[in-house]
Length: 218
Image (tube, rainbow, N blue to C red):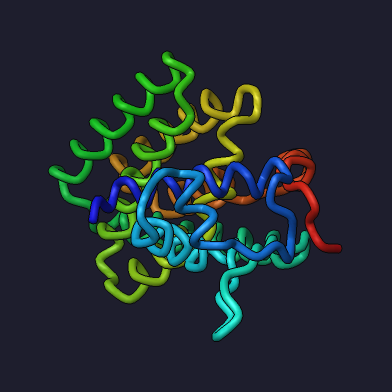
């Protein structure tokens, strides 16, 4: 099975959830989706499993897969925890990061900058994900890195959606530069603070995110 095919299908189903084509509570029919995408049921099943990991789909035994969009409180709680996990990773990484990892971060940033120039939010997100995972690993704490990566994966569709807001990619890129500077200079608290602010969804950013989620339960 082509894993990339399943990823692409998952992203397209995400789009349909976000634009309201699939509403909260809708059942995702594997047979119908396989027909629509012109594939077998295997990549559809894999795509649904991926969406279940992010919380956008709920799997109910003997009933099937159903669209589930988190409400405002749940979503902001998850982002609050993500921001704090990233802050701890940044604080520890500032003390422990290797020269090789700093070079890898710089390369990820270079590719992010290319995506900004091309206005390619999806490519930017892929490099952005790599950027953050380097920091998790460089925290030197395996359990922390695992938990941060797990929540990052669950919030993946929402973090990617944010990048489509006007000016957000360029802002994110500037924040990346500040993060790398803090890590390179070993400023632990500064690294923690810039990472926390980079991830936190507050004020206008949160209102924009919620406005783009159709049929969100109250």
